[in-house]
Amino acid sequence: MIELLAIPLGLVIGTIGSLTGIGGGFLLMPVLLLLYPDRSAAGLAVITMTVVFFNALAGIVPAALHRRINWRTVLLYAVVTLPTVVLGLAVQTMVTAGPFRRVFGAFIIVAAGLLFWLQSRGRPIPIDGTLGRRDRFWPVLGISPLIGFVSSFFGIGGGFLFVPLFVYFLGQPTRNASANSQVILVFVSLCSIIVGIVFGNFKLDTQLMSFLVIGVVVGAQIGHALSLRLKSGVVMLILAILMLAAGIRLALFA
Image (cartoon, rainbow, N blue to C red; front, side, top):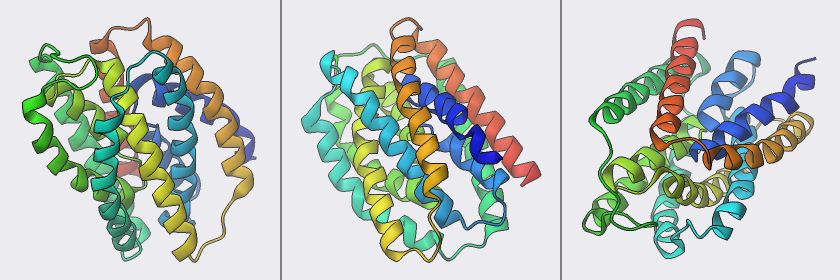
């Protein structure tokens, strides 16, 4: 019966993921952990990362057509992030289900609080339409491996960390930050899927994954259309509220 909800769930995740550029993994993973308490986090992470992959892939097509992506920059971010993605997946297998859920919930709550704080401070004026603050390029590049580890350990993609970083630290417009983040998510999620399947000792639920992907691909187009109409501040506020709700739900009721 749960699988029947996969397409509408994927539709919501795809819309939010494309709208904000976060891939939707931070929302989908808590839902799957609550719906399937007996399944391993590693198995659910592969499903989540597959959804993130197709969500990001569907989202970058219209973004590329509108020239919002700085390909050289985001590909470099992706390259330095991938090694720690593998490390995060290795560490994930050492943590049992209960502590994993509580730590995950607490992590999302803290991240949501940070995003609320950044939103209250306002966003710096963009200097470059697709890159932003050039003088902060290298510090952000240095943070990227840490995001890769965190995203793969929790099975969430990392877009909800990259987008605020690009917006508030580099000064990119939210639409461009979302587009650049989705390119990185394509590589991070694909790496996570391959490593998870090769080294995983779980049964892959292809039916659930397929239904979620169908909903996500459609939702990605809806999210892109909404991103053209909503203001940047509204998008980031939506992201923070959803993160807080998901974190509280998982931390208290996992």
